[in-house]
Image (cartoon, rainbow, N blue to C red; front, side):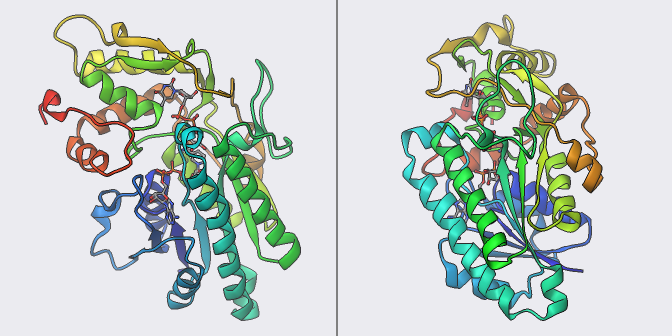
Length: 354
Ligand code: NAD
Ligand code: TDX
């Protein structure tokens, strides 16, 4: 079975992808710098698994990356490592250019040198897949959906850095013949998401009786996909995708932010009720995010048709219920991952009985 080198393997989507790919029989080499968003706790259960190895290293280290490709005779690269939080990109865009643009440039160069050394049969099979976002397409109005043919129009430093890295990946295919694939996915939710992102952040604020900060009027719309569905999509694109192509993945679950937060409150009311009142009373409308994209939605019919992509989580509220329960059962995980420098929020875990 082939070996997949997974950058960002200790992050949210990377670690969920590792689980899916191991279950499908692949060997995995995780490659991660363990930034504030990367945690060995996310891959703890894989310790001792002979099909999994982990390298603590930075994607900016081109030589190291190339040596790892050789050492493990890597057949496929799945590139998840990135700075991923839009709010952080607004207050500190530099890290996003460094990691997302220069980091991708660095490993494209390493992959290209390695690719040149492969035998023709291995060359035919080799893939470099860049995991990207629907945010590169900018914003939608009330109607329409993004697809593979939508022009790029990124609006935040984060999405601009992802768009730039997508374009580098595209150029390495056309100019150097590196067999690259790009996937653009909508908002992920599920276990192990760092609590700077909407869903886990709201869960932890609610459990402490803190206000739930909804940006603007909460009318912005996101298309939510369960992280395991995204992971399965990436594996399909890696194994069945055509070099030079891009594939979009979405959740077919558009919700306003206010709908998401209210659904979370209803779920928490039922599994962990407040002593008095309901969680919804904690919702507080706060200053809007600058340049806040209004709506994202994905048409992923190409992935369904050409890759055989099928979502297992067809109803967002079911996945959300499972996700809330996961966080309630993993206080220890939450305490550990938010204890690192650079975490946006500190939580008072004593209030949660943890
Ligand atoms: P995350 O922030 O949870 O994880 C990122 C991981 O990358 C961390 O483990 C971190 O340590 C690692 N990393 C960061 N800089 C690194 C560097 N210089 N060298 C090596 N490792 C480094 O992010 P995520 O939400 O899991 O997103 C993973 C990828 O998927 C990103 O490329 C992101 O743009 C993309 N994506 C995310 C979403 C989403 O909803 N979260 C949606 C679409 C696409
Ligand atoms: O406290 C909050 N209040 C709030 O109203 C936070 C953290 C977010 N929001 C809003 C902003 C967005 O409209 O909720 C929505 C979702 O916000 P995030 O979870 O920060 O995600 P988003 O900005 O949509 O980007 C995410 O999806 C696309 C990921 O972080 C990206 O990595 C991915 O590419």
